[in-house]
Amino acid sequence: MAGLHGLHPAERVQAYLKQGCWTRETIDGVFRDQVALRGDAPALVDPANRLSLVGSEPRRLTWNELEQEVTHAAAWLLEHGVRRGDVIGMQLPNGAELVQTYLAAWTIGAVVSPLAMQYREREIVTMATKAEFDVLVTCHALGDRRPAEAVCAARKRIPSLRLVVAFGAEDERPESPLAGVLELTPAVATADERQIVEDYRAVHPNDPNDCVTIAWTSGTESEPKGVLRTHYDWLCFSWATVDAPGVTADDVLLNTFPMINMAGINGMLLPWLRTGCTLVQHHPFDLGTFFQQIAQERVSYTLAPPALLWVILNDQELLDKVDLSSLTRLGSGSMPLQVPMVRGWQERFGIGVINFFGSNEGVGLLSNTEDFPDPALRARYFPNYGHSERRWSSRISEWIEAKLVDPVTGEEITEPGWAGELHIRGPMIFPKYLNGD
Image (cartoon, rainbow, N blue to C red; front, side, top):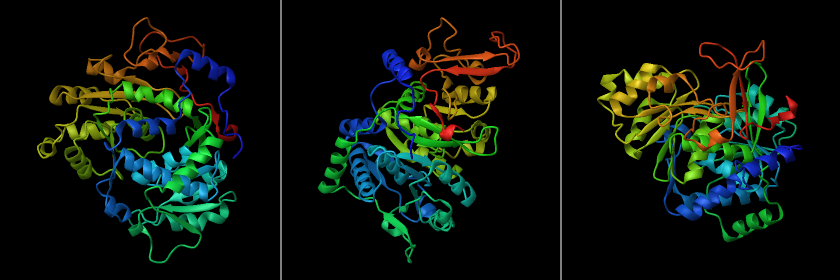
């Protein structure tokens, strides 16, 4: 699709490179750096309920094993005509294949547009047509549903679509192959496949100002809008979700959110890539599986919606049955946090709940335990980045500005108790909407 290269204007690029908040790194480059550093350390764990979800046993991959399968998938895409700038629609549950699709696409400079698993034909056709999908990667089964069959049924309504791909293990394939569906099975890359990828990348290097994702948001409108993001702004944004919880290579992250927008991508995928820790996938949300994974995988950090944290905190019978001893911090957001919930987790378990605010388009505001040790303040307020002499713990505080503005007078609101519009500025802001929507 045209118009997915060089998204940020040159003056913005130069300004943020000079400031140091943007660098020339790319997401695929960060991945390869972690492979070199971490090697045979654990990298990725499938959902514990994968067998009932897609029909095959869960897998565990080291960084080296993951790189082998990513390289195989990248070579497969190249061999089937996928090129830099092509748009790959992806409708996959959280799991190894979803992560591999992202990384394989980014390895060769393709753009990924992730779709929620609950989307049906209407949503798929709408988004695929808007973004002009060249490829759509999905799975054969998701419980009782058959996503690949649904895509085949809608294919004629997506003029740009060249390939429909079912990405999964051998035992996930249907007995009767679907006409027009190509199978992509995880495998170790051959020497020839590795050479194909290396040769292509040498001629077509990635640019950090290229689009890497088209995520979807409706906002206050009924029609979805495609949010374009580049290596530059995603990687800058990732420091917010690394610094606030203090993620390190020793952590085990449990991802419970669909890896299709801010929470899943910037809350889990990018901090994992940045630090080289272990990522445990979860899908769909199931409370029993959630607790099982925390205990068995020794999860140290996860994100959860406020309502779930409130329910868990107030169910003593449940708490008596589960092992949360490995958890050291939690992240939450998407709505105002309850002060008693944040205080309860801290006082009863010594676990700080980090308050996150972010959007597909904007910056990341965060209230962590270092800047807001008082749980009541942490639940209710965010830092006023750019409008205070106070030093904040996250490096992003040096890069962004946020303020409340009276929508009538245009004046900045500096006193508590007044409603206003949130104005944000900084290197995390997305470059534009798809097709200027």
